[in-house]
Amino acid sequence: MNRLSDTDPRKFIADFVMSFTEDLLRDDEDPAAVVDRYHTPEIVQIADGHRIDRDKLIAHTRPVRKNRPTCRVEVHEALADGDALAARYTLHTRMRGKDLSIEAHFFGHFAEDGRMRRAHILTRTLPAREAAPTA
Image (cartoon, rainbow, N blue to C red; front, side):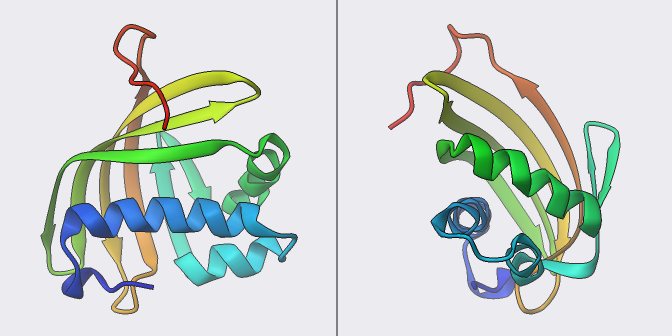
């Protein structure tokens, strides 16, 4: 896994999101092991006002695996300062034959080894006319 201090912030967040998703979908590895590879044990994400800890994050992997989406990340901007990263990106996904684009505003902190420690994420689903087609 890349370390934030060694990587361009745009590349870091794109690689983090894509690698985490790809690892979840790759095989039947225990989802807790995948979550732990990308997140510290005390991970807390606040996503659209909902608090997500490690256990809730692991539970969230079930529908991801069931739906088996394809996705790509388009990073519009990202800035890093020490262990903190702020980014605005769009997640383009195809799931069950439907294209969906979600704009995300991400503010997070990462451990020295590149695992996420905490994050605040605000998202909005883009209207079809604003959504770019998936690759």
